[in-house]
Image 1 (cartoon, rainbow, N blue to C red):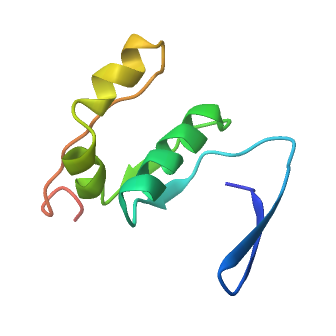
Image 2 (cartoon, rainbow, N blue to C red; image 1 turned 90 degrees about the vertical axis):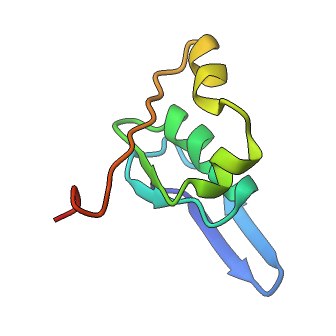
Image 3 (tube, rainbow, N blue to C red; image 1 turned 180 degrees about the horizontal axis):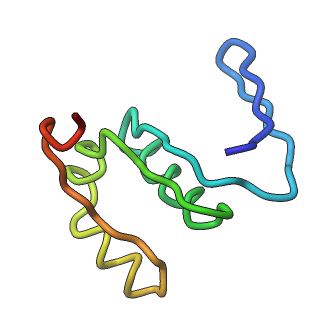
Amino acid sequence: MGADIAAHGNTAIIKGVDKLYGSPVRAHDLRAGAAMIIAGLIAEGRTEVYDIHHILRGYEDIVSKFTNLGAKLEYVSYSTEDKK
């Protein structure tokens, strides 16, 4: 997405960038998934968040909550057959 992040042990150093760019990302846990959604909303272009089971379990009806705020967000379900 274009973020400037460096990990040093248990610390992350984050430097500001002018903009983020849409890209495919994975939600590795609940909070990271929510962060990926928010980053995707401010990014230029399309962001697809995969492995969202943590998000769906932890946030009730998150798509409606964001769309009610004016976000352009869509939940798309697909099967493993669709990926072929």
